[in-house]
Structures are given as structure tokens and as C-alpha cells.
Amino acid sequence: MKLIIAIVQDDDAGDLIDVLNDEKFGVTKLATTGGFLKAGNTTLMIGVNKEDVDKVLGIIEKECKTREQLITSPSPVAGATGVYVPYDVEVEVGGANVFVIDVDKFLKI
Ligand code: 2BA
Image (cartoon, rainbow, N blue to C red; front, side, top):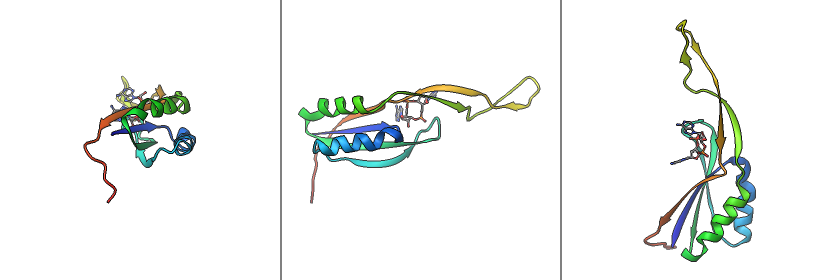
């Protein structure tokens, strides 16, 4: 068995969970926060049989869109005057960051 941990954007999470549930995959949704943007995102834990991993990865890839996000730098830099000046940074976020982990045991007790 494998555990798929997928960090996705909040906007994609609802539809992704619906599709996974339609395909009879169990999903646990965690409300998480990205360490860089300090913005909310969603982490899904999906336990699957080894042979279903590629199918789930395909669904995640289809449902999760890459987006450009403009942020004001969380760590403003000091200009020549010594005044701290926030600056805008454009980052590409998503589609999904995915970890696939071996599961030793899965118990429902
Ligand atoms: P955040 O940490 O908030 O990162 C959001 C986006 O900001 C990243 O998108 C990336 O484009 C950019 N970014 C992150 N760290 C950066 C840095 N040090 N310098 C410049 N730009 C940076 P994604 O790569 O798609 O990541 C989306 C979210 O997935 C991340 O939110 C984080 O919550 C999670 N994530 C990404 N890589 C991870 C990893 N190796 N381990 C754990 N979580 C990860």
C-alpha cells in the first residue's frame, strides 16, 4: 500500500476530492499553510493500493492547475536609504506537490 500526500491549492481541492470520491478513493483533507507565501493551501492524504497510484496521480494532474500568484515579499529589504521597502514577487504555484510514501501497515481497528 502507498500513501499519497498531495499539497494543492484551495481552489482545486473541492473538485479534486469529488473526483477521487467518485472513483472510490478515500481522502483525508487537511487545512495547511505554505511556509513561503504563508497562505492557505490544502493537503490531501490518500491511501491507495500500489496499482492505483498512477491513476490517482493522473487525476491530481488533471484537476490541479498551475497559477501565477503576485505576492508582496514577506521579508522587505532595506533600500539605500535604510528604509524597508516591500517588493512584489510573482511566483508560480501548483498544480500539486506530491509525495508517494510506502505504508508498512494500514489498520482499521
Ligand atoms: P509555499 O511554501 O507557500 O510556496 C508557494 C510557492 O512559492 C511555491 O509553489 C513556489 O513557486 C514559491 N516558493 C516557495 N519557496 C520559495 C523560495 N524559497 N523562493 C522562491 N519561491 C519560492 P509550489 O512549489 O507549487 O509549492 C506550493 C506549496 O506546496 C508550498 O507553499 C508548500 O506548502 C508546499 N510544498 C512545496 N514543496 C514542498 C516540500 N518540498 N515539502 C513540503 N511542502 C512543500
